[in-house]
Amino acid sequence: MSTNQIKTNWAQFIPLVTVFFFWGFVAASNDILIPVFKEAFDLTQGQSQLVSVAFYVAYTIGSIIYMIISYFMKSDLINKIGYKNSLALGLVVSAMGTLLFYPAANSGSFPLMLSGLFIVGLGFSLQQTVANPLAIALGPITTGSQRLTLAGGINNLGTTIGPLIVSFAIFGSATSSNTTLDIESVKIPYLILGAAFLLVAVLLKFSSLPDKPQAVVESDESIANDRGSALKYPQLILGMIAIFVYVGVEVSTASNLPAYMEKDLGFLTKDIAPYISLYWASLMIGRWTGAIEAFTDKMSLQKILRFVAPYLAFGVFLLVNAIAKHDLTPFYIYALIILVLIAADIASKGNPARMLLIFSGLGIVALLIGMATSGMTSVYAFTSVGLFCSTLWPCIFTLAVSGLGKNTSQGSSFLIMMIMGGGIISWLQGVVADETTIHSSYIIGVLCFAYLAFYAWKVSGILKNQGINFDKKVAGNH
Image 1 (tube, rainbow, N blue to C red):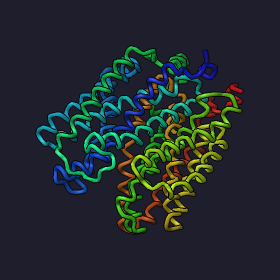
Image 2: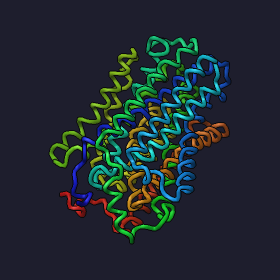
Image 3: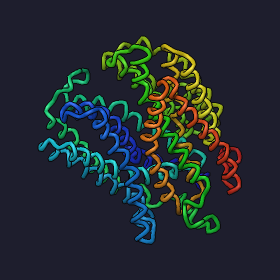
Image 4: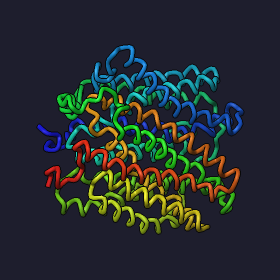
């Protein structure tokens, strides 16, 4: 059966997205650990950032290890042991990393803490290499990017509640401003997290997830499409650069916003947190909106859900901040900006290349408005970048691995390796900010979006030449 004719397998998809939640939960929780470790270990600001470095560099190192093992096995590791087994293995590796928090906390060792986070990241690298193409494969290719968008929405649910839960587990109160603690308080929440990793690994092992996605099996049977190496596919090579700059602009926009609001607008540090929360919630808002077509092919229901889903996600943001006792008054106007997202989603018609082009263009507009204005207008403009980044990962990923066949898992690994762009682009924007101003340094983000718009245009032609078309009418879904 063609993957364009089958329906999304929700029985397999729902347990799969559990790992997406974990990624967001841990990544956002690192922001809690940074100030905690800084005080507990008497670190400089630069040294405290090693928490992020250890975690994100692990993705690149993990991808390199994967390729080395595959090389010596003379066979792709994931294809050899199966997608389901690889996913379970990645969870076990991450669980091993959480175990290091126990001796690290007992001995008060910062390097051991970093080692634990690094190993957690190594496991996540393997999980991402497997889970992203698997989410695309569990249904028709025309809605593959929407399923990955939905999975990303679950990821952002983790980023929204993760810091609150970890903060409560460590400090005893989600609203406490006190960061003084006994470092041993860190070990319990991470041991619980490790136990959750192992539990999900067991559940996935005995789940109905396929050892090899049908989409990859069908591509394997088409020898003419096999080029022997993932790097021989231009959509992947250009897609690797796209992932690099996408993660870069997503991370750097948020990481430079606090300094801009403090230095240029006079905000107090304690008053900035809700706006950073809004930025990351914006990704959830956009991803819930972009995932609509993965749920139903009924146009009438899609029209309703396109308005319900984003405001439901926005409601989650408001609820979380209400619980944290933040003033919600400044955020109500953001409901109008969400209308731009909805219009862009409708205009994309579910085509990942078209969506990438439209959303990249809106990202450029948002950054230019932010750079050309000041006050709250600029803050809302920079924050809205989260809305327009929201669906870019699944769009890029879907386009980059399309047509790779049995090289899909290898191509996925190359893409995961490029997550390091988050650190490098953020550093580059910081250098530009030092030489100019933080306000004007956002030109780096404009250049990132410009490349993404170019990729959207270029990859459309590449895939059409390979006989791959994401137009639903051509695919026969309507």
